[in-house]
Amino acid sequence: MPALLPFRLRPWFRTRVWGVHDLAPWYNYTVGEEPIGEVWLSGDHCVVDSGPLAGTPLATVFAGHREDLLGADSMRHVERFPLLMKVLFPQEKLSVQVHPDDAMARLHGEPHGKTECWYALDATPDAKVALGFRAGVTQPEIRTAIEQQTLEALLHWIPVARGDMIFVDAGTVHTIGPGLVLLETQQNSDMTYRLYDYGRPRELHLEESFRAMHMQTQAGKVQPRAQGDSTLLVESPYFRVDRIALHPSAVSQPFPSGGPRAAVQLLFITSGSGTLHAEGCDPIPLRRGELAMVPACTSVWQMEVSEHMEILRATPH
Ligand SMILES: [Zn+2]
Image 1 (cartoon, rainbow, N blue to C red):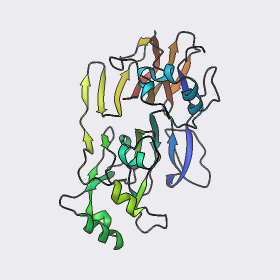
Image 2: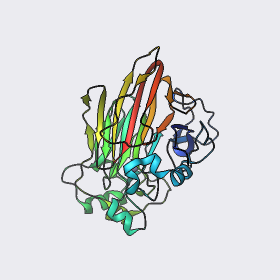
Image 3: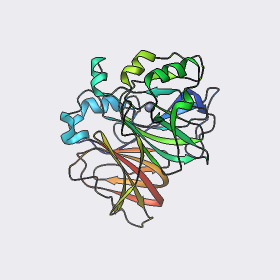
């Protein structure tokens, strides 16, 4: 089988009751009657839209080229591609929810739980998220507040500004307020328990939520750290996300190294445009809102920058 080459994935637009009708300036996409809340960038069903594998879902690429794609990581991720990136467009409050950790997920037959992080691509001045509960809140108080539909008052809310990175480890009760555009990077799991929905009629999963909930977690805003030619935004046991700024260049420029060992790199373009070049691969044009994947087996490649580019790069651990 030939070595896998870098590729671009086609975003997958998903309707959500809390979403928006206008995805500008991120996507030139005509939203139908139902609002779009999530744009999946590296989901199992997202299809390749460049090169010889065009039209192939990521899950199929993963199944056929796991070692080329993940390198040394391929021994630890056999069930599915490890990272899911999405753009979230909340226009209304999301439900208050919690994701199980690895141990609880395995009890339910899933390979892993869901630790995630959010990078604020945009934020209105009053935008906020909730992470866990205010100091001293107990589980009996949480149950009473859910019955009385007053849970919001017990949550620990934090303001969010554009460029903030927020880490949300599995077991953290959380929700996202309106007025944000978030780039979410998460373990590739869809296990979510809904604890509270402001009286909206969707189903709740109270007992699972209480079992999944950790009262103490590591969740919170993460301070960025300059690291030579990139900025480290978050490092966790499951993923690393950094930010790279590239200036326009007449010639292709080398890309900052992703770390000491070869790993798959997920490159999300937050602004600007350019073209990814690798040997044996047709040039891949990239612009804002798109995601390219550079497999672990691709050691030499360059980005040619047309318009000042900012890239958020995620790599799995
Ligand atoms: Zn979540």
